[in-house]
Image (cartoon, rainbow, N blue to C red; front, side):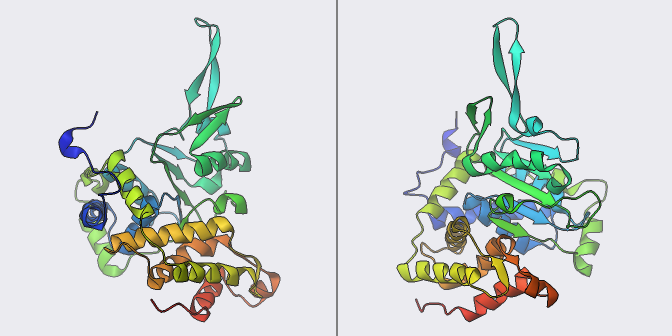
Length: 327
């Protein structure tokens, strides 16, 4: 039951004029806990509005988990968190069936993934089998246990963190799972002033505890519907297709961006346009999101590795070389 004062209009009436103030409130709350990473916070919100999942990769201690927990509190969604370790089982994520002696039947017991916002901490420390348990829930918003499919509540968002490859106890995520994350972000070290402010913010209180709920599931769904209604001109659609096609024909790549990545780039561009107070996408929106959406979806070949060329460098080259339409 939703109080009338918290009810939000349908997508036809919920546009940039309503979304932008709400987004600013959410961003303001997150910034209480995550200092000096405004661009990262914005892109996480863009991904949520675009109905995507977020992968945050970086060394331990730079605020990956803090960012994820802060979003769970600010959005006021039902959330679960799993600290992935080698002994975490697939059933811990998806749930399992248990026999009920009173009813003489098997009952489904929910796993951690059965929520609105699933925080998967250090996802690449667990086994490949457990990692693969997330594939269906990330794509379909549902889990299948003993041939019975159980739908997750909407909206459904996965925010996963991982340590860089080569860290102790880490395993590579398969390309099929990486492709299901709409964006991959890197937090990086804070600058000097931000690090000083981080120290000041911890005077007897955890900054995450100061984050107040300023959204709910209905509000997030309305924002997602508003993003769906953003217009993309055919010339901008062709620009998106040209960028993606360039990754599939680049001499330094052995794996280009998938069609799922093409759709993700379009969705992320629409969400960014919405937060920029427009009801249409321009090429600059696409350029802004191109690297975050596509870098983790490509694989460089041996020639590029010998030349020490990174996926990010290839993406930047493509962004500069593919001409954008004049709108």
